[in-house]
Image (cartoon, rainbow, N blue to C red; front, side):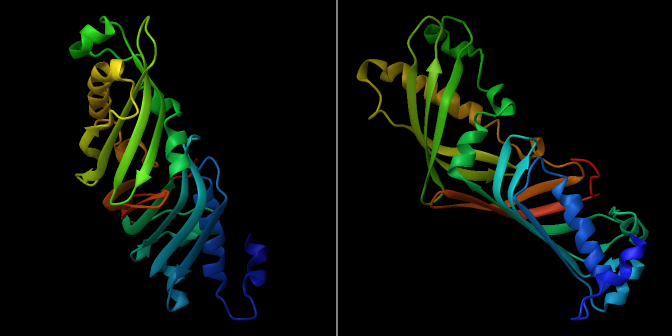
Length: 264
């Protein structure tokens, strides 16, 4: 790498150190994800000589099609840090070591298809399948049940509509349907608030059981979506707000970056 320094200065005068850091950072961040369609990194450092002391003004990343833990896809993810202090010697080795933690403004965009695909992920399915619900013993016969075929539709004003089926022991599948408003609790949990059973698409003879099962699923969901379960090693995400826009769910918040992980 040292032998290539001369080639890192382009005709426009871009500093070789910034270009090298961009390259190392792009490769490092790309390997944090199982897959990525694109990862672009830009460093701002003025004057550029500060980089040799490990000081940069800001660090910006934009990525598309990023897959976390093999099964959770994000359409877009971006962040821009505050001033960063790093060990420049680590950059020469193709790594990034922070001298101290830093914070970044972050935004994550999920699409409706990706959200629905995430309900098929093992981490999610194990919280929806083979569940014992003592308060529904009269419906379940005291046996475990499973929620399957979950489909979520994004609506305006942070509203969602959710459909699913419940596999009851020795009975036919029971469809369930509800609407909710998405909200944030303690900047890390996603809540399903003001949930309402929607009987219109449910056969009349199944509505009693369907409503009780819908309420049970609502309680499960409200204890399931916690960002701390999806944090990257060394990076803690927090949400300030969320918003539905068409078929996209947009999270805005910040990331506390304690260290840059060296492995996916």
